[in-house]
Length: 471
Ligand code: NAD
Image 1 (cartoon, rainbow, N blue to C red):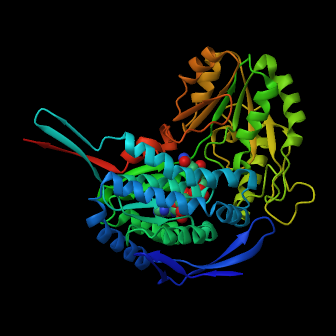
Image 2: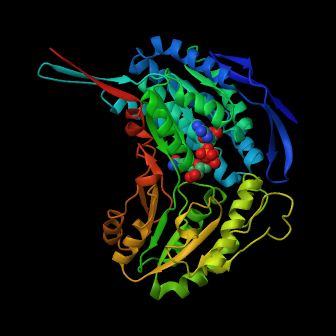
Image 3: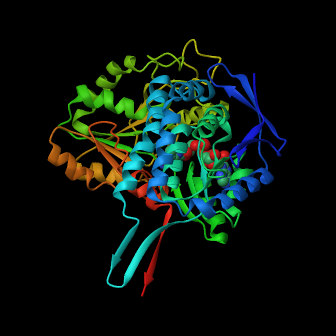
């Protein structure tokens, strides 16, 4: 059993002032694997004060100095990809086939941000006017448990590129990953106070970051409910906010789609991170005339998505993060049945032979209508809803009939038609024919999926304020 009692403040490990102790439980076997002493408001205030002191000089650094830091961060995180991946697998049951690439993406983001910083002019002049892009100040970076390493890296990279100093509050469920992360930061030998990390509860440490007048900006990834509270509570100190929130992404299968490719892709997209992914494509929109064919293809393809031990590279779906998330998924499966949807695959309870951890059965519902709770609310588990449609226009209407707008997917062979459909979807990202990524492309949501964007120049701009000098 590991014991974690320290935070990282002002370039050094410090004992927690907060005294609350929490167990970290391995969701694969429901056994406690670590004990963490959580921070309190005083720890958060000390971290904010350190970041404020550091901002006085770091805010004045040049692109070159910031680039050097991004470079160092890339090196230290790249060297620990294996350890970060293992911690993700152990701590929240992230399947290694997802956790490995996601941590690797975290390491790469320092390089892609370096490139974005080169491409972003920080000063523009015309006539007698000069506009410079100034760092907003101390930023509070708050992340969820579901891909903590990537979010920590992406937020820190953009903040550093902009010249901000930071206080990071990773999810309290990510304490083991955070330990490796702290070692990376220490190894990078950053300017003192540039990056402070406090492990604590959202309603304690997160809330202090949101209300503290010395924090200028909050970059948050997490649930819609907490995102709304940050916006509301942050208004008192006029916080700048970036909110990366939930989703219920549609995946439109056009009637010319090649099911041999589109169905495996649809299941990859739906069961991404065991379904615990904001971008997961959990509404599969299928042309009515191909529905039977699609159902058969799903049943035939499911054996390629085994559920089980997350450390096994063949496993596609691991356990849910904790008992609460297990119960949440079960309650939605029951709700779907009660609403009249039909189970094609899966259903309630544990998969056979997996009774000890928080494993659920990957579940596919058919006969779903877009007004059902299972089609409207984010379940955050491996539950896919198949919804049929009549025409492309109908599909677009159903895709957009949601409170969310984080991500969408379109599958089809006629690329012109797929692009035409993609261009009508109200979502921050639309991927055609598969789960695609580009670290220079913006990531973020329309509607309740959030405010602002991360990655590339868009991510850096979110930490900048323009200042115009006229003479
Ligand atoms: P959550 O909102 O419960 O917690 C996220 C973070 O916010 C945690 O660090 C938590 O401690 C903190 N927090 C909680 N209450 C707070 C408060 N009052 N003030 C400040 N901080 C507070 O979310 P979660 O369960 O950790 O993560 C799952 C959610 O995150 C899902 O809704 C998912 O869609 C979303 N998510 C979004 C993205 C995206 O990029 N859009 C990515 C991943 C996850």
